[in-house]
Length: 217
Ligand code: ATP
Image 1 (cartoon, rainbow, N blue to C red):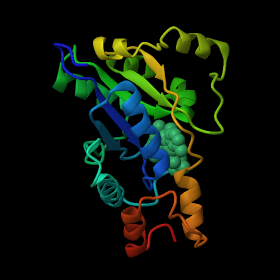
Image 2: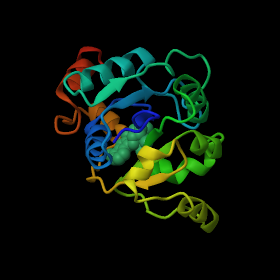
Image 3: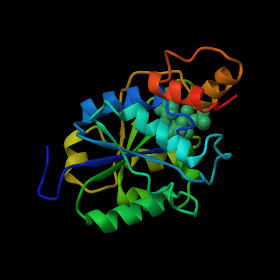
């Protein structure tokens, strides 16, 4: 569903400490629903609102590469890892806009937990001027925002019209009906530290890398 301005290009940020099926599976379903040809994974460097990751930037990048090696939907952009400064998504999209022009539709993919914390992100209103938000469901997180003002802000931008995401460059929020995966990287780190299995929730090559590099012990 391309238009003259170019195809909708979607990005997916996060710590990926480590990457897991809760990251990948909902986004695969979202890509089907919305008609995304490519999703670019952008691991964070120093997430400003998060504790520091346990694996190094290089290790998190390597794990993402292993996870997507056989999956042509995904690509990797490691620009945030190469920066010294914190990863502010609004800033990253300012840069992406400069590179890709004002009219190309751009999107940022987040889970429902991230949507709830969005009003506390750096310049989140500017982020919406630069991209759409595509939101995946996540078990355990309410579908309403934390207060009425935030809920009104959300509702003013919500759309169910997929064509609009491909036509407009930015500004819409789409809540996708994606399958639920009760998986978090925090839980995976705890499991690994306790020597409990993660075979069902972490891609095999990523698990092999974790073992080889003695991560999360
Ligand atoms: P941690 O447990 O370390 O906080 P995490 O598992 O939440 O990590 P992140 O790398 O922080 O993973 O998340 C990156 C993005 O992936 C966020 O937008 C988050 O909402 C989304 N995400 C992570 N896990 C899931 C899941 N199980 N279902 C849907 N979205 C998810």
